[in-house]
Length: 260
Ligand code: NAP
Image (cartoon, rainbow, N blue to C red; front, top):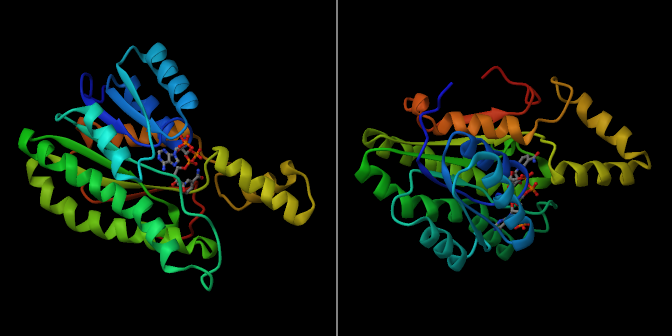
């Protein structure tokens, strides 16, 4: 299927690895010129070079922390005034206990996983609306749909972002701009490996056994891949998805047991 995106310009945040990289790869395959960012310059440059080589699109790498005002300014400056596609992403807040989190912990989580994507949307939405076309995809989490007990900071911040999107998506849709959220369940990224390792240590079992236990909780019987995730993101950004507005798309292999 031709996604109708050749020649568009996109920003993909936090994209040197994992789900962000999956989105960048899929958009590049569809012909989108990209600005990508991550904090670590070496991995970011390597990813940018690999995407350029594979897909022949323009890829500008901006090494920065997207959760800071300076980082966002650098990414937006590199992208220029005509951004067609924005994919927001950043690392998730650390796990912990609801009893222990301070105001500062909440402010950090809100800054990274709610206020950063909101600031980026506020920066690019007016231009998209003026040009009559735009796509925003926010990478949130399954934790918005089904809370993860130890991820209360994530549950809170991402639910806040989801509320903002629900209201805002309906105010920009009339100008040809869609905003939707992708909710990842367990995917085979570095994060999954470290969770497997933690589970293995906690139970004194091998990493393979820990992974098998976790796979058994997913009806699909495996983790998702960044490529699958990226393909869904690219579809949401495509010409074909213009009637999808303010949706939360769960990609979890069926792990969340619910009817809708
Ligand atoms: P990952 O494999 O660890 O990759 C994270 C990427 O984001 C890296 O490129 C990292 O590079 C970059 N990054 C992190 N913090 C950043 C920051 N402040 N500024 C700029 N770049 C940053 O993570 P992932 O598994 O793809 O997860 C992506 C998001 O989805 C996270 O918020 C995670 O909580 C959420 N999520 C993931 C899963 C899953 O199964 N993978 C499930 C639910 C939710 P640098 O470290 O060099 O900055």
